[in-house]
Image (cartoon, rainbow, N blue to C red; front, side, top):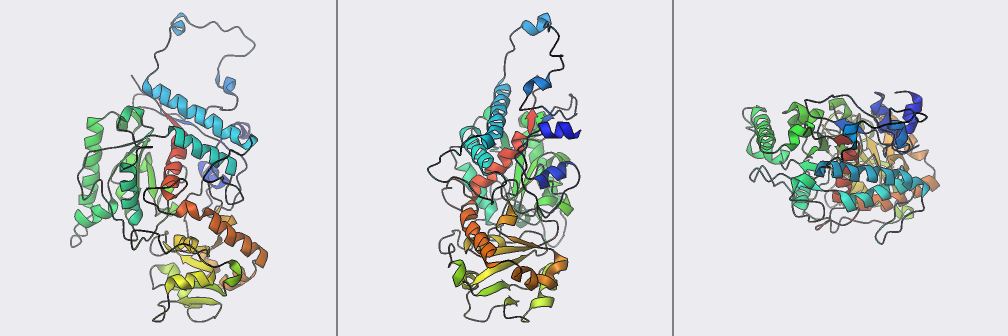
Amino acid sequence: MSPKEREEIIDLRSEAVLEALNGTHNANFNHSLASISFPVQDMQTPQESNETEVLNMSKPWLNSTVPLNETYVPHPRMKQRKKFSILDRTEAGLSQARAAIREASNMNQIQDPDYVPIGPMYWNAKAFHRSYLEMEKKFKVYVYEEGEPPVFHNGPCKSIYSMEGNFIHAIEMNDKFRTKDPQKAHVFFLPFSVVMLVRFVYLRESRDFGPIKKTVTDYINVISGKYPYWNRSLGADHFMLACHDWGPETSFSVPYLHKNSIRVLCNANTSERFNPVKDVSFPEINLQTGSINGFLGGPSASQRLVLAFFAGGLHGYIRGILLEHWENKDQDIMVQKYLPKGVSYYEMLRKSKYCLCPSGYEVASPRVVEAIYTGCVPVLISDHYVPPFSDVLNWKAFSVEVSVEDIPKLKDILMSISPTQYIRMQRRVGQIRRHFEVHSPPKRYDVFHMILHSVWLRRLNFRVHDDQ
């Protein structure tokens, strides 16, 4: 694609994701959003061409192959009125949404009774807001009804993997986004829980992943045999959601599931084939009681006297490096394996300016959301991690990213942040907290809606064709 063509395309994602399109992805996401573009890919049936077509959304006449200075006489067959299918109308609606989102940057901010996104926490606040409103007006999800609990239509709601069960239950009970008519759906949800697959299908003594793979493969075979939608797009308009560490591995059970489908994963690790262009990173939230009541809020920046805090055992090599350099070695950097008896973990979060969030064996950590809930600026220490909702949120505006090799310099890095900049970041943490909150029933702009919005964005980036 030439530089000229690239300027004409529009995409509601950060430049870091655009870099991934060009094969130069930077997992640190240190870039600002320069433009809003939608590379629109045609998802065709196996009988059709598999080439990618990029349409110019701002100058549609450029998509024509007919010179503008010549008289165009349509072929007699083209004079016949085309009968538009439900899919054609669905795609037309998405095209209108793309145009509206693109135009949002040049329009006044839309008023909203609940929340108006604004500030550097967003790559493009106006575009996000318009996209969110378009999603509320148009987006429809079909949830396959095949499958039986406990593996399907079920998931944990009181654990570190609580978002699996929370999302499954929320989407199945939702009247606004869920449609019972698959012909009207923009995307199709595969309602299995990887946590439940591990609990009820995987045999720990055997260490054989085969039963999980067979269960997922059989399920895809059932829905692709019963409905035309999987084969129509080769899975591109289908999505799975998993917070368990084995989510990516589970998706490898079916080639098109990991290659084409939208994978909504906590374990968003680019070194393990997480693709930020089509996949979605969402937060790991440890809902110990099934609710966020009592976990939200904390003192202002001026009342936080601890520079940085972490408490946790050995769990992966990054934590080992952190503990080696900082465990009980500096009163400003409070790093401990275990807290003394009587010391509250959440109270320590509330007393701290910065909360250290190192990856464990996998890249995601519930500590990120714990920090956000308590008003503590998260410090992300990881390799190859794509933070949640990075297509919308500019994490550099409200968090600190520290590479693994810079762990020995941790105090110098944090001390180099001016008090003014810290206060800004801490206030921004409070502003974006709503996007990570879990509510039942869901509330606008909360984590459930942000997950849906990320899937909506991925769906905007391709068209599905019916070969009939």
